[in-house]
Image: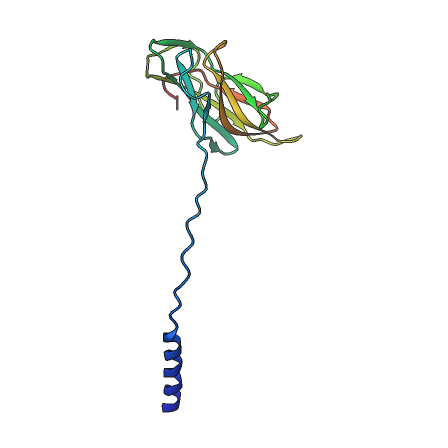
Amino acid sequence: MLGKLGLLGGMLLVVAGCTASPPPAPAPLTVPTPEPGLVEPAGCLDTGVTVKSGPVEAALGHRAIVLTLTNCGQAPRTLTGYPEVRLLDKEKRPMNVSIEHGGSYMAIDPGVSPQTVQPGGTLLSVVSWSNTVTVGSPEAGAYVTVAAAKGDPEQRITVDTDLGTTGKLTLTAWNPKLKN
């Protein structure tokens, strides 16, 4: 028995004598995440507004982004109707998609009525699409251009749109609140 304890004690002594420190823990990996809805050009346009988007929201194969128009000018601005929207591919070329006005699975359209937005105030619109794939090749957009109204300058917003084979975006009219 003493021989076994002596052997075990010697092994413990050898193990205890090793003083190599453990390797340092690796630094945490940081991967920058781009902000959704980066606007180009940034800042207030000459028309006194700027438009940004929230992240893509998803539900049961449907997608949507909320556009937020902010009056960054000095005077009230009245808008009636829908934003002007185009979908661009990753090379920033316009895509052949239909743009419909109205409600969708993701949003209720409040309908067209004059909306006056005061300096610092906001209006909202929802851009929605479905990721349905039937016949053909799925399409995906990389950018949405938005003009507050027909004839206004466009702002390009980074938005990944996985349209499936639907080839359609749906817009709600500008409104101070989203309808549930």
